[in-house]
Image (cartoon, rainbow, N blue to C red; front, side):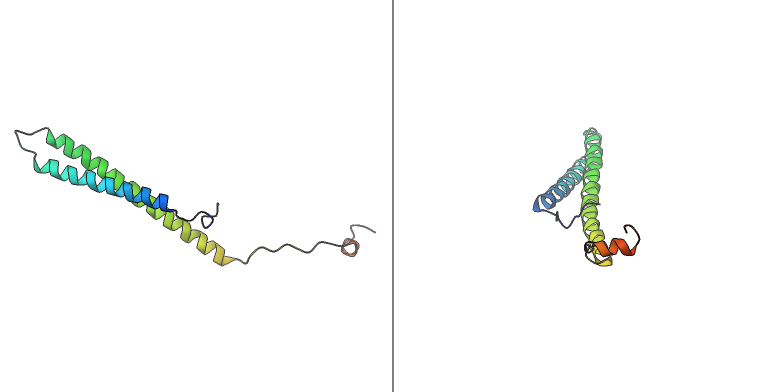
Length: 105
C-alpha cells in the first residue's frame, strides 16, 4: 500500500472533483430544463432530457466516489500509522554474538 500521507489530497485533485461535480449539476439542470419543454410539439426534448439526466447522474456518482475514496484512503493510512511504532534498526551483531548462538567457534 502506498503512503497517501506522502501525497496529500492536492489542490488539483480537489479541483478535478469539484469540476466533475459542477459538470454533473449542470447536466442535471439542463435535463430538468429540457424535461419541462416536453410536449407533443417538442417531442424530441425527452431524448435530450433523458440522456442529459443519465450523463449528469453518472458524473455526480463518479465525483462522489472519488471524494469518498480520497478521504477513506487518508483515514485508512492514519489508522495504520497509529497501530504500530516507528520502525527501528537492530544493532549490528558482533563476534561474541555469533559465538553465543553457535554459528562460529
